[in-house]
Structure formats: C-alpha cells, structure tokens
Length: 280
Image 1 (cartoon, rainbow, N blue to C red):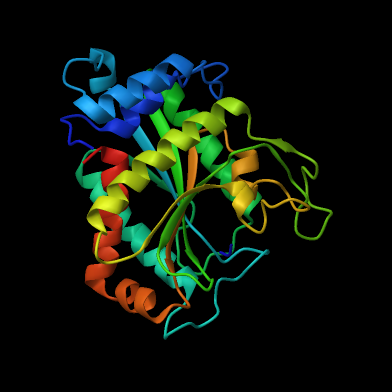
Image 2: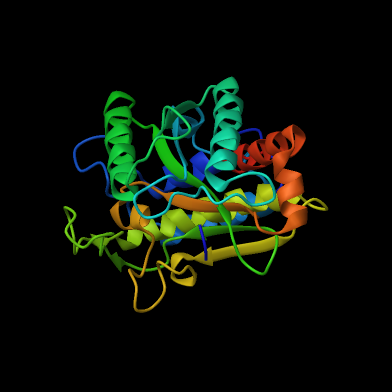
C-alpha cells in the first residue's frame, strides 16, 4: 500500500477499555476519553501497577488481523526483490496470530488463504461483525484491529497510520454498496491514535537498528486519504473499533526487503507488533 515502560498487564487493552468500548447494545460507541488520555500518559511514564482497575485485568481480548491484499483496488502482487506485498502481509499475519494466541488473545483473520481477494469495505464489515459478536459474548472485553501492509516509496522503514479525520467512501468502480458513507466518528479516531501509538512504541523498541522508524501518521497522509480523495482509508471509514494500518517495510527498498523476506525478520516483526498490543 502506498502512500514503555514494561508493565505486568497488556497496556493497549487497558487503554481501549479505559476509553469505554461498550460490550453490547450500542456496542460501537466509545465514551469521552479526554480524561483517560491523561491516565494513559501516566501509565506510559510510571507504569500501571497502581492505577489499573481490576475488571480490566480479567478482560477478554480480540485482535482482528487483516493481511492486506489482494483486493479489487490493488492486487499487491507486484514482484519486488523476489517477493510480493500480499505474500509478506500473509506470512507475518500468521506469525502474529500465533504469538497472540500463545498469550491467550482471541484472533480473527480476515482471510483464510493467502490469495483470497476481498474488498477493503468487506474486510471492515467482517471485522465489525466479529467484534460485535465477541463483545456481546464477553462483557467488559476489548477489541481492536490491525491492517498489515508493505509500502512502496523513496523512503525506507516502518510507519503506522490511523484515521485522523472522517473520510467519505468513494468505492473502486463507483457503483459499490455504501458509496458516500462517512466515518469513522471522533471516538474511533481518538482510540485509534492510542492504538497506533502503543504499537509504534513497541515496534520502535524491538526493531531499533533493523528498520528506520518513520513514526505515526494520520490516514490523511496516505494517497487514498489525501485531499481530493477519500480523506481516510476505506477500512478506517467503516471501522467501529480502534484501527491501525501498519506499513511494515518499504518493499521496493533493498534493505527493507532483505529484512522482511527472512524467517527471522518476519518473526521479529510479528513479535514487535504483538508487543504493542500486549504492552511488552
């Protein structure tokens, strides 16, 4: 796709639970998190031992993993340095799934096979439905989603994107369902920023010396989300839970490609992303 301190408990789910993700009824709505953002900063600086509420500790967790491409918008199948984006997205997703499951986290995958072609709008709807079902069955639980991609640009390194504004869905051919849908709401934007920051912190730590850190950016900095286009990525527009898009490497860069093509590089990437989700 183009363009902490260590704590005993999984911080990203503390963050999202503190933000007030409902578990039933109007499940997609999040409470005002202005005060909780100060709490989050306190957790990052001083640790969570004395301020984490007991219900959060026992909360069940769902991570929805979306291995990007192929989709009607882009196949992600251009061969770059001996591999393709959709292949790298898939193999890292499988490793991330394994790491999270080993820590007791429930995982939903948007694809069942590597070459499965799914529209980005459909991916978001699938995630929303899985999260709704999970939260209804697990009161007090939390759910987030990460979309795995590889960039293509003159730069090199990893970047995390989140919806920093509302977008308007324009579709691919212009006649898809839900053309004109506007989203996500401000509460999803805020909690998605929290998610992006947590993932970025872990990736910056674990990947230091391996990949360049290009930071956290809004969807408005992407081609699809830029002015004159949608204003946000498609899966962000439709998302009802916190969402972050991870551009793991710049695949047309020889050094980045060399790293992510190796088993060790893929495993380290999965562990880095999981670290952001688990708070380690």
